Image 1 (tube, rainbow, N blue to C red):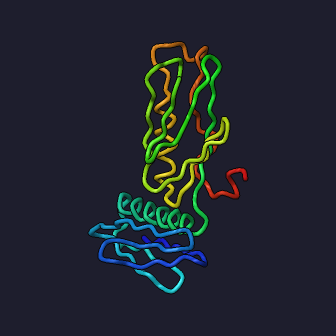
Image 2: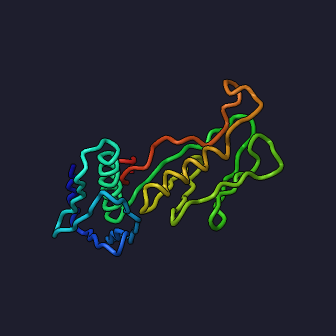
Length: 180
């Protein structure tokens, strides 16, 4: 079982013990890749992820590592961007970024603010009723979007009537595809 990942121009991959380090114009990402039956070999412009085993579980790990590496090279080259929409009909919601968290005020008329964590080095921009979450790491961008959506989950009310919340409109993808 073998997967070959082509490294995009402007990105470089190096190996430090069990970690792969991907560097590019937008930043640097490092991730641990360790498995007893899988070997990673770096050539000039490709990375070979190879296993001698033909077992299904090992093959799925090889494919997962290849996908992670493609996401990492895409992230350091162009970055990732997720878009969200703030929806309210009953009470006007106020959203603000404070350090490494997003504060949601007056959600459903509540006096207490709801708090959502920002994962990693992700950047959150709020423009009227749209939230743009961007960063180099696709997993951190996706987790930040999920945290925001989960923080505004309605409990104890009819979801057909109370549709207020922050909803994902575009999952993490390169900025040119996200709708700029």
